[in-house]
Image (tube, rainbow, N blue to C red):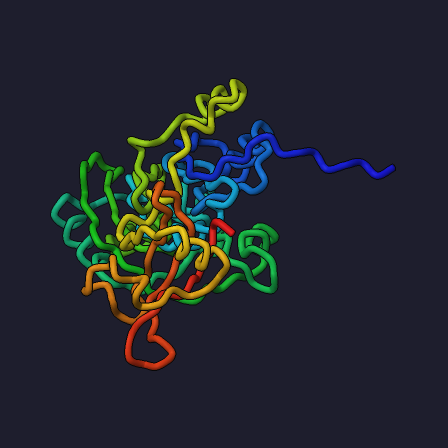
Amino acid sequence: MARSRLKPEFLTDGLLVVDKPASLGSTEVLNRVKRLTRPLRLGHTGTLDPFATGVLVLCFNRATKLAGYLLAEDKVYQGVMRLGLVTDTQDLTGRIIGRASVQVGPEEIAAAAEAFRGAIEQTPPAFSAIKRDGEPLYQKARRGEEVETEPRQVVIHRLEITRIDLPRVHFEVHCSKGTYIRSLAHEWGRALGCGGHLEALRRLASGAFSLEQALALEEVEDLARQGRLAGRLIPAAQALPQWPDLSLGQESAVKISRGQALSGAELSGLPPRFLKVGQPLKLTRADGELIALAEVALASDGLGFKARPIRVLQP
């Protein structure tokens, strides 16, 4: 007789902010939590390198349907750049491939930072998780293969120097999705003429989620063993707070959960400024539970609007 599939023990939907410790990769953290909870589905919203610490948002069960949208949100980091040493990975884990004396002062360091604010072209490191031919580039780089990466546009909303203790520069950065802080440190050091690498990194925030909401991994594991972790999950409706939230009646909630569009009349509770093509929406039940993500579109007659579901959480 075939073995029946183990029934999952953890069926609660929601989000959990973990303060990832150093030395563990994001997937290792996820797997440790998964072994203790056995949810239907579990994902995260943005990888942190093993040496990095800080905000790692885990998505449980139906909340995993939000992962792609949360991954696209801005991040805030605290970092330390070590000047005078260049490594092949652009961080402290790599092999030193260049040395130089550090003959720069605070004014020069601050002036060089100006070039990295705003929309910039950034070349991702060869040791990255970007895939080519189905394989992460870091695997090719570890084998000694020559790896070239294409520049991409990212946005540095804020780059602030918080302390200079040469050869180390402490900084904080608020950036868009896809920004490599290792590459920022590497290029900043190169602009100063002495080179540099990222020596420490801590993620302070990922989208709307911050360290203030985070639990240490040990605390998460203790709560899971005690069967109390479900009570610490953040409801999916609290994600994407910048998206307008429309509470639906029972009939409209059933329609959207079945993948059907809502008519203009059903959008009457939405402020007129949000009635524009492409406007994303969060659709919730009267009890505040998130049913679906939707997008405003033109009605079929071209004279009004409708809301079509783009991600249904509550079928």
